[in-house]
View 1 (cartoon, protein in one colour):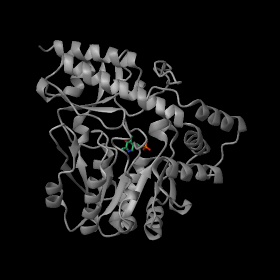
View 2 (cartoon, rainbow, N blue to C red):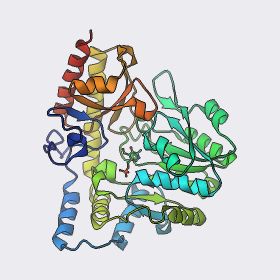
View 3 (cartoon, protein in one colour):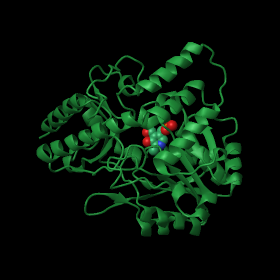
View 4 (cartoon, helix red, strand yellow):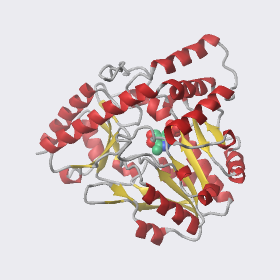
Amino acid sequence: MASTNFDKAPNRRGTGSFKWDHFDQGDTLPFWVADMDFESPPEVIEALQAQVAHGVFGYACAKREEKGAVLEYLYRAHRIQASGAWLVWLPGLVPSLSVAAAVAKVRGAASSLCSTPVYPPFLSSPGDAGLESLSVPLCQDESGRWTFDVEALEATVRPDTGLFVLCNPHNPVGTVFTREELDWLGDFCERHDLLLCSDEIHCDLILDEEKTPHVSALHLSESLRERTIVLMAASKTYNIAGIGCAYALIPDGKLRMAYRKASGGWLPPVNVFGYAATEAAYRHGEPWRQDLVEYLRGNHVLLAKYLREHHPELSLTPAEATYLAWLDVIPLEIEKPQPFFQKHGLTFSNGVDFGAPGYLRWNLGCTRALLKEGLERFTGAIRSIS
Ligand SMILES: Cc1ncc(COP(=O)(O)O)c(C=O)c1O
């Protein structure tokens, strides 16, 4: 039985929460930016309190135990046998995407490739490094699951393309790519001489790990490793994204050096809180994480059931991972769905920003009570147009 009560969450309105306060619109319910409303595991909070109690907040470096916690977690959770040397600590993954693009640029690339819809910085980060951002839509099978459009990718990649940016598990469509899909992608990157930057930040939020286990880019062929950058963090899973601590795993020494060089003076160092929270999450958070995933599964089920019963004309992507739901609202024939729902007291992420107009991303990292309230408002908003 779950020992964490996710039905209870602190009030975040007026607390300086980007998700709750950014639009500052009275009682709008925020189902957009990807953090959760839950308290982090108690061990994480205690580790942060101990850090505050120390009272000194100078520049930080990772302690041996903090590095050890990451390496042990990688092996325990994902059977990734990483060496400490591979680890590059980062203050966040968004700037890390731009750094990956900068590395590709230094290697002579003029463009970068990804599949859409996708988390918006995947589309904008190549531009930070002066690369053209090429994208190819994912395609859906009969069940609604999204995967790579192999033919379109082959047709789009160019001789000057130097990077593929992968999101696995995928934000926003929730696909956990299979070994076979990833083997194809690895081969594609090798044939076209692309770096593979694999953002795996959502890998501990898989809804059924037996059915759809996480296959890291580091599990693919040995030869692919010389072109692979894997990005990870404890931040999404343990709700510590605001603290700013993430890391890259780069097995190849030369690529790692290029990555460190490209990040140059742009990125601030990780602070003591980031290291401490990450260590505590990885060492002690597993029971909490399992409870969380069970709760999130319940939220996904509730949303799917509600939409089937009340809005059968809408199609919801069947999520394999994350607390994000991807909803096709094109059948509603609303010209601009995001502002429309915002006017009716619901903030969703706008499909346009992900390269997919007519879609909304619904963040389910909230209490079931809030989700139910959101669903009622959703129906009310739709009724107002019919
Ligand atoms: C796939 C993916 N990468 C990166 C991030 C953001 O990472 P960070 O907060 O470390 O910049 C997110 C946040 O939603 C995400 O979904």
